[in-house]
Length: 49
Image 1 (cartoon, rainbow, N blue to C red):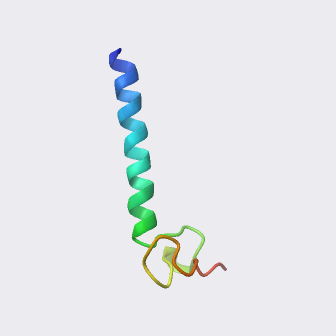
Image 2 (spheres, rainbow, N blue to C red):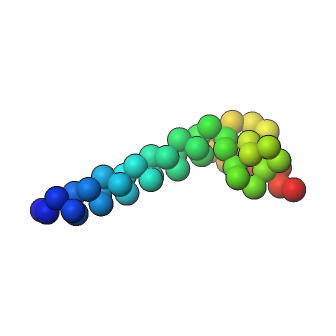
């Protein structure tokens, strides 16, 4: 396994980790103020404009 493919795999894991952290914190870029009304994995859905 080359160094480049290892770094690419590490970068992909980081992107997935950031997505999961933002999903569990209730972040939504489409909601008013960028946060859903309740925290959780799309619990109740975001308040869209």
